[in-house]
View: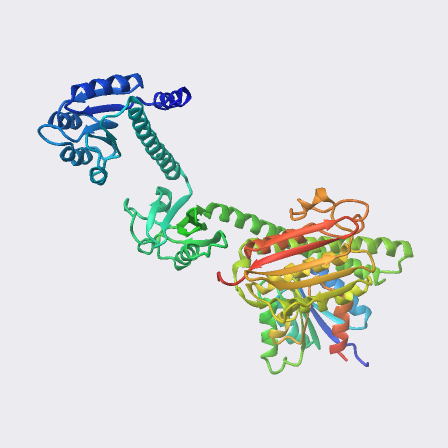
Length: 500
Length: 128
């Protein structure tokens, strides 16, 4: 063996951040001495015993990391001592020293829990190798234990509830936050079936879905459930995210579910929505009334008007109209956000829905000589959704496309389906969206501001409404755009496999 | 037309009532005004208008109730009822705009914000 290798081995033992405690149990004084010297040099804390009985006594008194155990000793043999050691300290690494290293013996000692064996006579180098292997093993075990403890402390201190199950839906881990959420006072739920503690069928269904998710896909299943612990307590709204976890071969080992109590958030959101809704209503009525009065004046019912007066009144009237649109959209938004969106989902035929809306917008498009077409892929595409909301989404995208297209453009609406999702696409040959603005188009009240958009009316709420609806349907929306070339919005809704 | 036809305008917003009235008067109709549901019922019974322009959201008695009272009363049921619905308040889509007014016994409806010209067309259609 060359020097480099020697150095490496030396280092690997001495580097250990703990000093391994080693016990040598051997009746041969010579071997005891040699091992003591060698291991002490390597930084181990070494003790020795000359027979099995004395060795066992020492083991019962204190913990050793490694025990070098001779098999052939007077009194009790190493083979008899071995089970006793394991019974007292299962984590102690036992290396058997044997004068007759036959295969049978090795297997027998391994079966009884030995980590490795050394055949007599052995060289110092052989001893070093076996010891360093044992230390490596101990260190790995310690690392795993440390990591486990770190994880446990972390998960237990989270304010989010965490529940993991194996693929038989037995609880593998449940943190205090989770137990508190479900009002469970028992401390040992581990190993029990999830269904013993959770009665909510929607949640059980989610866990089931996660465990049985096919290996080609990896989707987070999200939902919200309402939970009431007892009659006197308030209903909690819990946001739930459920995912499978897998081994290296991508097999499902179980599920991880994270629970987030969003009750307070919901309440604040509701307050906000109510406020917006109230303000919008209060603004709307007087605006409508102003519009009517302007109309009466404009119609000349309050006396003759000059052309100039008419023009100014007409402009005021237009501005007020856009204000009323703004208040309508604010109302829409607050309604969508206050949970209206979660009601009444039904199976929709996207093709039919899109055709209806395209017909509705045909005149408006024609007034700007825009060609509005539907690209047909299938006769029907079914999805679960709220009709009014999905109509609102498509309607907003089409009317945007019309507004932001110069005369004579083309708008194409397409619906398609893939194995796991339904797709709606609205593309135009309009003015496009500058790159810097693309990240903001779904923000509330955001509008692209430049020379071309200055004379286009809008509230900056349309797309944020679209986004809210798509989100509530667990869908995604993507946008591609090039200035002066056009814009293309694609929406993907998950298919109805997971019914809400 | 020997005598001007009487139309009752009901809304809790006096400015709106005023504006609609001016427009109606310009088209040679007589106009009666009411500002809530109860008052509307009194005026209807007293003056027997040919047509009522009826707001839905009103204090005391709402438009749906007033409409039902008119249509379920044999002596009043021939009065034409045009509802002012706040349909535009809710999500505005094609399928939505058509249903509210029609599910009641009302003869016609117009969504708010009111397009005065359209309202006049509706009135003229029913008063022919």
